[in-house]
Length: 178
Image 1 (tube, rainbow, N blue to C red):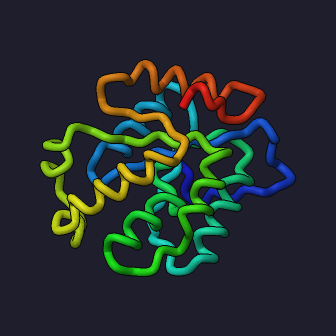
Image 2: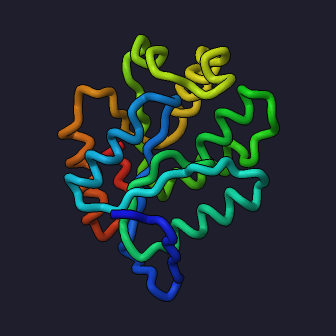
């Protein structure tokens, strides 16, 4: 389903609606995984195409997503990507690690972590290849403390089933599933 021109209202929000965030290095397969999951689970997909310019952009985007009246699977979220890329590319991160950890407590985050050779075989944005090792170290470090499940391209059925159970549950993220 297309999300172009999507507008959500809090009055339409169901407390049972949830979102899943796919995170990882550029070119690691987030978009491919998102497309496959959305087709299999009949879920709406959203992508973060615009880099947030200020802290308020991150807060507004997060508020907008949490008000959507349906389950969504998101390709990247600034609570993770801005923390990683901001620090590695020498710009002030728009969020803190503490804020990211608090946000992740109520979100199912999937860390897309393919084998290392695959990471460097994809075309990358300017500055990414030059900082690839630092970016991967930052991702790995963050995901040592951030609640998540890992997708390493060997366990699609597990990821799909875990996400399906999460989206259909009446409770939030189950710690045993992460």
